[in-house]
Image (cartoon, rainbow, N blue to C red; front, top):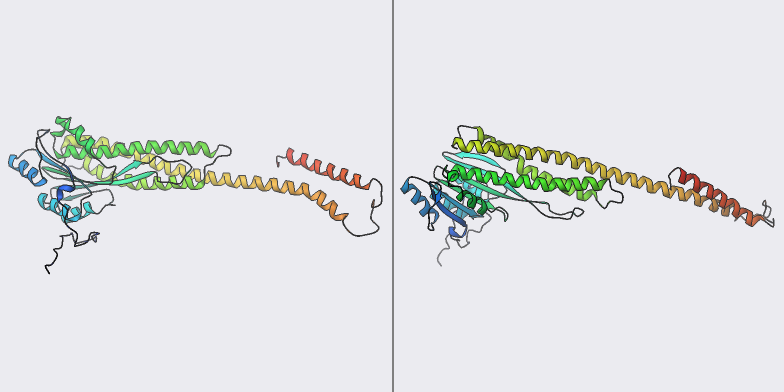
Length: 358
């Protein structure tokens, strides 16, 4: 029996989730778009990633932009071999759930960005609010490779917008890197605005009488804010390096644009920190409100118990089996007992209501 060939795999920090006997899927299946750009314009025609790189290097001008979505190890290995990507960076591009970071392998930059998407939800229910994904960017002298994980991480709009601005695209691969970073940070701004609306609505409802807002709903939003903070905050250092370090191979003009992106990112990170503090205060407010409500309920129960104790005590006394008891054989004794009970209970009811116990 002939031996079934084994797929090549990255060896190192992670273990492959793919079976070694899995039938290889062509790399083209993972490529969403592949284009050659010269002087800011897209060349007509369709290219494979290898043909596109060969075209650029034969012309000695322009660059390639290859977009991939959730490639497997074999597909990523093919792309990595063609473009000379480091094995560790290629492995990270296959295995999602990476922390935002910037790494440099010789002349290739590797940037990891976490993407976020706001999920519409019921404010009073416990449900997912922030959906996350990832975009990895490899940037070399004459190529940009983007690897996406997640259904909401599409870059078609970014590519279309850049193609409509040839002057910006003519700046090279750095223009693509900036456009992607700007797109991701803009999504952060949108999500934080939506969450801010949720926080304000919760804050208003916490102090509304007979509110249906629960501690679980506030805590769920707080957890989602923590997830958002983990996606957003670590990107601060990579953006600072890209926008200010002259050792990073990014054109000066692109660094100016990246400084603006870094400023927007800083503002978003500060707002997320404010959300975390405010939600902690809201949880304490909800718990305090529940505690006050419980105390009010116990006070009302105690008041009614005090009123009910009067007829209970009277009935208990006159229920004793003694022959000689005051007013036992009096003609008006029964009515007088009821009058005393009603007067005492009425006095207690008036006093308790005046003191806001009922």
